[in-house]
Image 1 (spheres, rainbow, N blue to C red):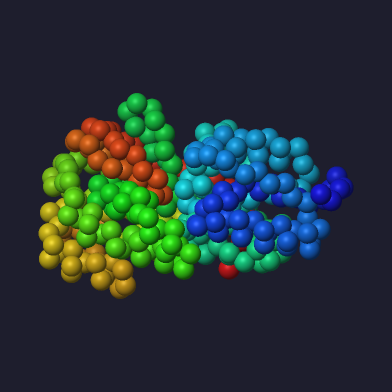
Image 2 (cartoon, helix red, strand yellow):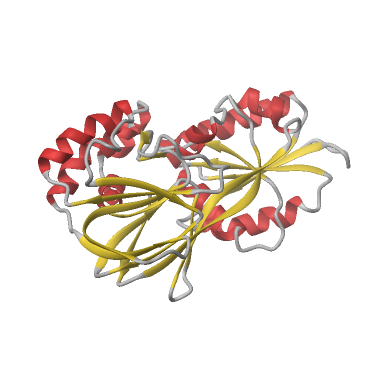
Length: 320
């Protein structure tokens, strides 16, 4: 470590095994570039699932003791999600920065973040902090969740569950083909689909009852599933949440929609069974049990009532 009270420094929270060990490679490159620039660094390694939720508190407290420190998170969307769940509960808002090293990297893709550690270090102390919007989700039992990209219930969450369980996921991620795993699971998830009913309220307007839902997705960014642009118009700074609802979708509909979802981005308007609305906040009551995913992290919910709102957190954004 280099010494000096006013020396630039970074505190690195890293999930080493993220993205088939991409985390290790990114950390190594980041350390090399820090040494070249004479920037002090300290590494905090996650050691078990959900460790980032508690480790980020230590990183924050240690960082506050330093004059010119930047907090950097290295990992996938799941690692960032874990950190943000804790950070969203803290009264103080110390800015963070992020380098993607996961299999999906949808947050990084949406914000056009650099993966070049040399460029990252060259610009980290030059960029201004930016307020980034994300979703805060609370259920009737006061359980809290966050989503930097989006929260999905039903079909898309089942795909995420199957993708996370896939033995091929690590192999494909080595060749930058992680979204292929997600795409391969679409048909198998459809075959095991479970439709549900829900009541949805947009911006405190009149409650609407929806039957035979395949999935609902509340999106803050365009992407899910490792680059699938489900809501091309979604933005992280417009104060709006995009709601996608798919109902009564049959095999023919699915075959017709998939090419547009994966390539053209013109899937809305092709059928009334797939709709898109925007609002500043939502409430949803779900009947029965369903999978729910927040940035690809899976939970099972039962007769749940959720409130989805927008919150903000400061980031040092280093773009490509």
